[in-house]
Image 1 (cartoon, rainbow, N blue to C red):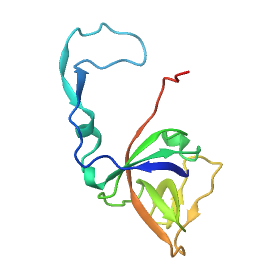
Image 2 (image 1 turned 90 degrees about the vertical axis):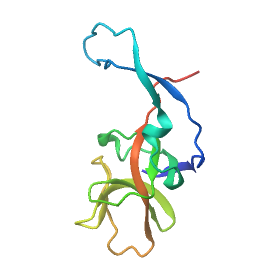
Image 3 (image 1 turned 60 degrees about the vertical axis):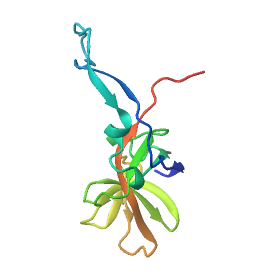
Image 4 (image 1 turned 90 degrees about the horizontal axis):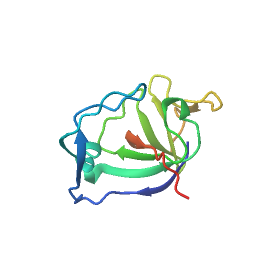
Length: 144
Protein backbone atom coordinates (compact mmCIF):
# COMPACT_ATOMS: atom_id res chain seq x y z
CA UNK A 1 0.00 0.00 0.00
CA UNK A 2 1.83 3.10 -1.16
CA UNK A 3 1.21 6.35 0.67
CA UNK A 4 0.31 9.77 -0.59
CA UNK A 5 0.58 13.30 0.87
CA UNK A 6 2.49 13.05 4.10
CA UNK A 7 2.04 15.83 6.65
CA UNK A 8 3.03 16.49 10.24
CA UNK A 9 0.73 17.88 12.94
CA UNK A 10 1.73 21.13 14.58
CA UNK A 11 3.90 20.49 17.60
CA UNK A 12 1.61 22.83 19.52
CA UNK A 13 -1.75 21.17 18.91
CA UNK A 14 -4.82 23.24 19.61
CA UNK A 15 -7.05 21.95 22.36
CA UNK A 16 -10.51 21.17 20.97
CA UNK A 17 -12.94 19.17 23.01
CA UNK A 18 -16.02 17.52 21.54
CA UNK A 19 -18.88 15.89 23.45
CA UNK A 20 -18.44 12.25 24.41
CA UNK A 21 -21.62 10.38 25.30
CA UNK A 22 -21.42 7.94 28.17
CA UNK A 23 -23.45 5.33 26.29
CA UNK A 24 -22.11 3.22 23.47
CA UNK A 25 -23.71 3.35 20.03
CA UNK A 26 -24.90 -0.06 18.88
CA UNK A 27 -24.15 -1.09 15.34
CA UNK A 28 -26.83 -3.80 15.53
CA UNK A 29 -30.27 -3.31 17.03
CA UNK A 30 -31.12 0.16 18.36
CA UNK A 31 -31.18 0.80 22.10
CA UNK A 32 -32.61 3.67 24.11
CA UNK A 33 -30.21 6.62 23.98
CA UNK A 34 -28.85 8.34 27.04
CA UNK A 35 -29.79 12.01 26.97
CA UNK A 36 -26.66 13.35 28.57
CA UNK A 37 -23.04 13.90 27.77
CA UNK A 38 -20.67 12.24 30.22
CA UNK A 39 -17.53 14.25 29.41
CA UNK A 40 -15.53 15.82 26.61
CA UNK A 41 -12.91 14.17 24.47
CA UNK A 42 -9.93 15.96 22.95
CA UNK A 43 -9.10 14.08 19.74
CA UNK A 44 -5.53 15.39 19.73
CA UNK A 45 -4.95 13.91 23.17
CA UNK A 46 -6.71 10.66 22.25
CA UNK A 47 -5.01 10.07 18.88
CA UNK A 48 -1.59 11.72 19.20
CA UNK A 49 0.57 10.83 22.19
CA UNK A 50 3.81 12.43 20.97
CA UNK A 51 3.15 15.29 18.52
CA UNK A 52 6.84 15.83 17.70
CA UNK A 53 7.17 12.16 16.65
CA UNK A 54 3.85 11.91 14.79
CA UNK A 55 3.00 12.36 11.13
CA UNK A 56 0.01 11.68 8.89
CA UNK A 57 -0.28 9.95 5.52
CA UNK A 58 -3.17 9.05 3.23
CA UNK A 59 -3.41 5.35 2.40
CA UNK A 60 -3.49 4.42 -1.25
CA UNK A 61 -4.41 0.98 -2.53
CA UNK A 62 -6.02 -2.09 -1.02
CA UNK A 63 -3.13 -4.25 0.21
CA UNK A 64 -4.20 -3.84 3.89
CA UNK A 65 -7.93 -4.12 3.26
CA UNK A 66 -8.34 -7.31 5.31
CA UNK A 67 -7.20 -5.52 8.49
CA UNK A 68 -9.47 -2.54 7.88
CA UNK A 69 -7.13 -0.05 6.19
CA UNK A 70 -8.52 1.08 2.85
CA UNK A 71 -7.87 3.53 0.03
CA UNK A 72 -8.20 7.11 1.29
CA UNK A 73 -7.90 6.35 5.02
CA UNK A 74 -5.87 8.83 7.03
CA UNK A 75 -3.05 7.06 8.86
CA UNK A 76 -1.56 8.39 12.09
CA UNK A 77 2.06 7.24 12.38
CA UNK A 78 4.31 7.49 15.45
CA UNK A 79 8.08 7.45 14.86
CA UNK A 80 8.85 6.95 18.58
CA UNK A 81 7.21 3.53 18.97
CA UNK A 82 9.19 0.30 18.92
CA UNK A 83 8.94 -1.61 15.66
CA UNK A 84 7.51 -4.90 16.92
CA UNK A 85 6.65 -8.10 15.06
CA UNK A 86 3.10 -7.81 13.71
CA UNK A 87 2.94 -4.01 13.86
CA UNK A 88 1.56 -2.05 10.92
CA UNK A 89 4.46 0.13 9.83
CA UNK A 90 5.36 2.72 7.25
CA UNK A 91 8.58 1.67 5.54
CA UNK A 92 10.77 3.39 3.00
CA UNK A 93 12.16 0.88 0.51
CA UNK A 94 14.61 2.29 -2.02
CA UNK A 95 13.14 5.73 -1.31
CA UNK A 96 9.50 4.72 -1.82
CA UNK A 97 7.05 4.65 1.10
CA UNK A 98 4.73 1.74 1.73
CA UNK A 99 2.49 0.62 4.59
CA UNK A 100 2.67 -3.07 5.54
CA UNK A 101 2.67 -5.52 8.45
CA UNK A 102 6.14 -6.12 9.88
CA UNK A 103 7.22 -9.77 10.05
CA UNK A 104 10.51 -9.70 11.94
CA UNK A 105 10.83 -13.50 12.10
CA UNK A 106 10.87 -13.95 8.30
CA UNK A 107 12.26 -10.47 7.53
CA UNK A 108 9.27 -9.57 5.39
CA UNK A 109 6.69 -6.85 4.97
CA UNK A 110 3.28 -8.44 4.62
CA UNK A 111 0.04 -7.37 3.00
CA UNK A 112 -3.40 -8.14 4.37
CA UNK A 113 -4.78 -9.07 0.99
CA UNK A 114 -3.99 -12.34 -0.77
CA UNK A 115 -3.50 -10.50 -4.08
CA UNK A 116 -0.20 -9.05 -2.83
CA UNK A 117 2.88 -11.19 -2.11
CA UNK A 118 5.21 -10.55 0.84
CA UNK A 119 8.15 -8.19 0.34
CA UNK A 120 11.44 -9.76 1.42
CA UNK A 121 13.52 -7.14 3.19
CA UNK A 122 16.43 -9.23 4.50
CA UNK A 123 18.61 -8.22 1.54
CA UNK A 124 17.35 -4.63 1.26
CA UNK A 125 20.13 -2.19 2.05
CA UNK A 126 17.92 0.86 1.60
CA UNK A 127 15.16 -0.02 4.08
CA UNK A 128 13.99 2.35 6.80
CA UNK A 129 11.00 1.78 9.05
CA UNK A 130 9.64 5.32 9.36
CA UNK A 131 7.12 4.62 12.10
CA UNK A 132 4.26 2.55 13.48
CA UNK A 133 0.65 3.15 12.44
CA UNK A 134 -1.35 3.85 15.60
CA UNK A 135 -4.72 4.74 14.07
CA UNK A 136 -6.50 4.88 10.75
CA UNK A 137 -9.40 7.23 10.17
CA UNK A 138 -12.00 6.49 7.51
CA UNK A 139 -14.35 9.05 6.05
CA UNK A 140 -17.86 7.67 5.65
CA UNK A 141 -19.73 10.70 4.33
CA UNK A 142 -19.05 11.44 0.69
CA UNK A 143 -19.78 15.06 -0.05
CA UNK A 144 -20.83 15.99 -3.54
